[in-house]
Image 1 (cartoon, helix red, strand yellow):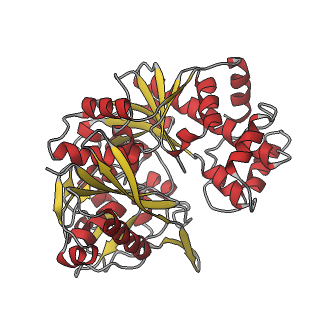
Image 2 (cartoon, helix red, strand yellow; image 1 turned 90 degrees about the vertical axis):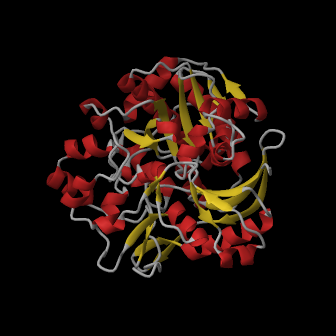
Image 3 (cartoon, helix red, strand yellow; image 1 turned 45 degrees about the vertical axis):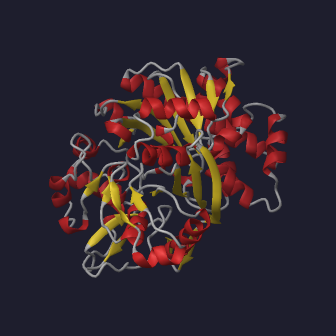
Length: 470
C-alpha cells in the first residue's frame, strides 16, 4: 500500500499542493505553490477561481501518483452551477462589501436568537447565508463551497463536506444536516444545497480528462475541507485541556468541545460552533489575524518581515493598541492609516514608524487572542492548561511570546503545516494507516518541531492595555 497523499491547501493569500509521505512519520514536500489574491472587476472583488484550478492541476502533476487527494480552503465563499454543471460567474471574495446591511435585515426577519439557536454561528458580514441573499439565483442549480467546487471539477461529483458547510449559517448545529426550515424561511431555493459528506468519505475518482492532464489517477477524498478543521485535527495536544489558535491571515481562537454552546451569553460574545472532525465542535471566535500586518507591509514597499519583527521587539511595549476585530480593518486598503485613525479615536498617539506599527499590530493580536481564549474557557466551562498556536503564525516568535504573556498560559507553537497535516491524516485514516484523533495528534507531536513559550511579565499591563480598546 502506498503511503503517499496529496493535500490541496488553498489560503487567502496563496495556495499550494503538498505531498505527504507517511511511511516513516509525516514527511511533507511542497510540490507547487502559487499566489492567490482578489481580483477587482468594476465594483466587485472576486477570486480568480479558474486560475486557482489551473495551478492545482500543475501541482498535482508535479506531485506525481498518490493514494488519494484531499482539498481544503477558507470558508464561506462559493460558486454557483447551472443545470448543466457550468460555473455561473467568478466566486465573490468574502472581503467584498456586497452584504452591507444584510445581517441586520436577516436578524430583523428571523431573529438573532433563532439564527444562533439553529446554526450556532457567529455573525460575520461575509457568512454564506448573507452572500446568497445578495446573489441572483434564478439560473443556479447548485451551490458549492470552494473545496467542493474544486472536488467537483476533479471528479464530476457534487456534494458538501460538513466542516465547511457548518460555516454557512445554514447547517443545523445539532443534527449536522441542512437547516431546511431556516432555508425556506429565508426564501433560498432548496435545490442549491447538495448532499453532505463527512471528512474521510470518498468523493470519486479523478475524471478521465483530469487524469490525462496530470498523468496519473487516484481517488479524491473529503478532508476536513475547512482549513481550520484540518488544522485543529493536527493540534499536537495530549488531552482535552487545551485551547488552540490557528494563526495566519486570520486567527481562529477557541477550544474543542463534544457539543455546541448555544447560550445567550455565547451569542452575545459572538462565538461560533463549527463542525470539527469526529463530531467535535470548534468553539471559537475569529480574530482579524496577521492580515493587519500583511496589509501594512503592502503600504511599505521593500519592507522585510524579519527586520520589522526584530525592530518591533525593541519598541516600547503598549505604546498603542487597537481592537483588531473592528470592521474598519476588514477590507483591503491603507492599513497604517486606519490603525492611526483608530489610535486617535481611542485617545492614543499613533505609531511613528513601521516598527512601531508592527509592535502595535502584534500586541493587539495578542490581546485579541487573550480575550477569545479567556471567553471560550468561561462560556464553555472547559479548563485550559496550554494554548497551541498552529499555522504560519507559529513562525512569528514575537507574536507567540506576546500571546503567552497576554494569556498567562504556556504557548506551544507549531506545527506551521497543521492544515496540511490534518488534511493528509484524515486521508491516511480512511486508508487504515492511523486510527482516531488521539493517534493523529500523537503522531504530529512526535514528528514535528514544536517550541514552548512560558508566560512572563506583568499581567496588570495587559489588563490596562485591554481596557483601552475592549
